Length: 158
Image (cartoon, one colour):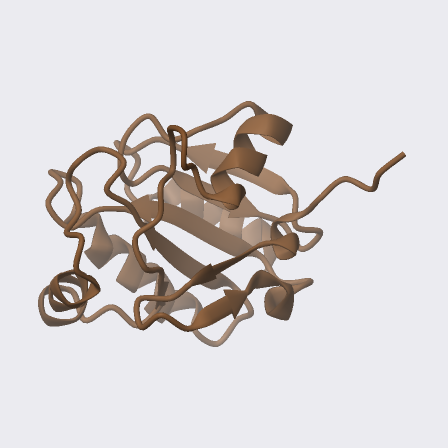
């Protein structure tokens, strides 16, 4: 029987086109959020940055996976960087645009769907993975990244 996968089995390209192997974060909790720069929830980048600042001295890793799956993201990574860096001063890892649904869904989101029967219904869905690389909890777009319920879950993991 094949060993089940964990979040650490995947990789993606960051906003600068560099390969990011999630295996480098093995044993650390990960918060992965599908994001978009032209969405009503885009101000949640501020909440993600607040979490990044709050937990920067811990081993929590925050990753924004930019996506145009809902037609609200720029295609050019430089345009995305402008939003993330200029408007929100983002310090956490940000991916190059990937698909979170549809025919060309990225392997991370394909695995989340297959193993956990979850997929983002919109931008800014949040997925928290524990130190074993398994999904601990998830939240929809309407839950702010720095909400008490997310912070409580993160605090239980770190």
